[in-house]
Length: 95
View 1 (cartoon, one colour):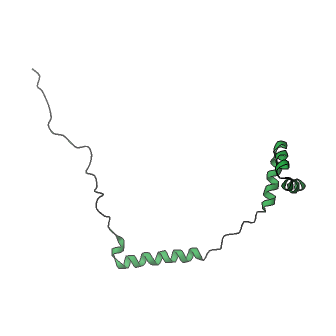
View 2 (view 1 turned 135 degrees about the vertical axis):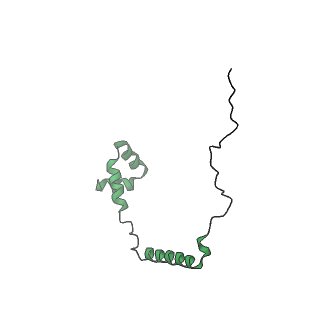
View 3 (view 1 turned 120 degrees about the horizontal axis):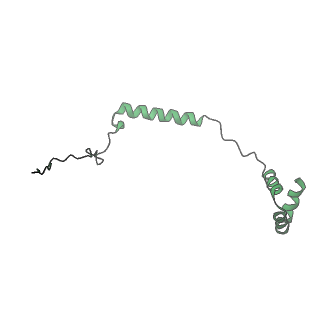
């Protein structure tokens, strides 16, 4: 005779999920913490503003165009000559 063994006990494999409906705690509720954060942010801004200004673009656009002109095929140069002879003459003198 075989006995029918069934278990009625079930285990939930997933743990209880955290609730995302509650607002997270705010650190700025404490005035000392808020003042510290503001101080550090302002220090960071002042430090960033003390840096060197960005350098201006020192690349001569004509030089870049000349390098591109030197890489052109004969057909591309011919097309440039027909469409813009002044630019062609300017670039071909430096090539």
